[in-house]
Amino acid sequence: MKNKIWITAANGMVGKAIIKRLSSSDSYDIISTNRKDLEQTSQIDVENWIKKNRPNCVIICSSMVGGIHYNDEKAADFLYNNSLIALNIIHSAQKFNCQKVVFLGASCMYPKNASQPLKEESIMTGEIEKTNLGYGLSKILGTKLIELYNKQFKTDFKCIIPAASYGPNDCFNQEKNHVIPALLMKLHNAKVNHINEVEIWGSGNALREFIHVDDMADGIIHILEHYRGKAEINLGSGEEISIKNLVKLMSKIINYNGKIIYNNEKPEGVKRKFLDSSKIKKLGWSPKINLEEGIKKMYEEYLK
Image (cartoon, rainbow, N blue to C red; front, top):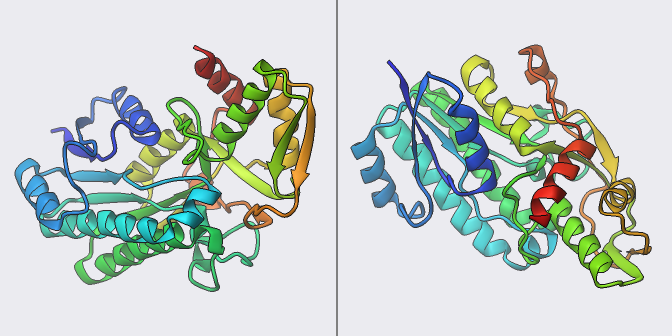
């Protein structure tokens, strides 16, 4: 008998990648929703939906997202909306006996001064980066609810903490996009409009880890099927890169030859963000798409 699995935010980058990954398996009966199908900030609506459809598994991809400026500017909205989505779905899933729930956390859950690489045990051991405060707190809240439900109700719910994702169907909204799509747009626009210099926020020395969304989707399903440990588990690529080197790589791919200016007066977040992904490596999983290959494919899609 197939597992009925509910994928939320099915039109988003991660939701689409997970559905593509699941479609290659005969083990799942996929049901999916988008924002227009279900108001996930409403507890009654979520409860009624789960009661009617009775999924065995849930992967919570829904989240209000944005870049560093948007996160800071809309921190209250991020905290309120994302917390409601997480709490409503996790609570209703437990109430109607879902066997498994996967909640997608974020690396901004980790304290800004945590030891690197970031281990799951360091969550809530210090203050998180203020530019991601609302988003990070909402992810911590969902994760801790999962921990407590597992303890109280003996559920098998997990929080997967991925590195920054990128790839097909990424957001190219100037206000809401993340690092790679933001840089891709900025460098491409400078190239086609013959702009001789591009300003990048921060020093360029911050280190980041990125994971292609297809690898992320594959890792999520691997964890869903094989991981039986504590609630939290990291999902990274195992590669880190400075923003300066990322800009150099993307400039080469885009063929932009202008001057890059780093504005130290603008925020850049924590100095390093690199996940300890040893738990998933022990499960026999590893990523397949390296950063240069992934960005090349992403840029080809952007040009279409």
